Length: 178
Image (spheres, rainbow, N blue to C red):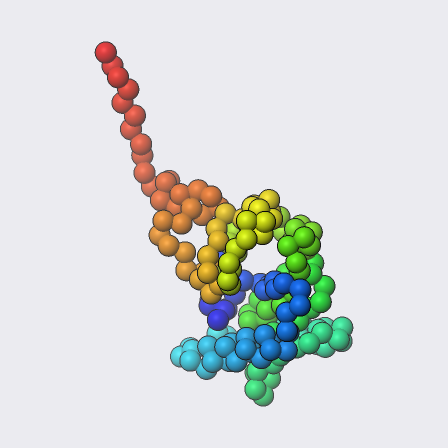
């Protein structure tokens, strides 16, 4: 699910999957999950005209480019899932628009180069190989978590590699005075 309507600083904008992924199956499962999440929301996020226009534009552009697009029933504006075969990261218009991209470990660094140093958290489904971890670390990632937990860091999380509570503490050093 996409909490906070993707407006939180830890909100996912893209899902990267390994080569050979069955996009039809994955898309159906993700679409089902997104719709279930949307239906259980008691208060749906607002979709003012400017937001609705960005969502519609993302959908129209994806269709025009021949990308696979999964839409909710009756095409409501709660979520949109797009498979873009280009692995290069492109910012999402947010508000429930998420893109699925394919990139193997050897191509992931290049695919995410435009946002190197600005990726805080990566959600991982399955095992994180040391090679993939090194790719993400070279891009400046400072937190790995289970997929779906990106927006819920623990209190002890080191935001951008720094202690979240460190600025609230004053350390007093007393050295041997003898």
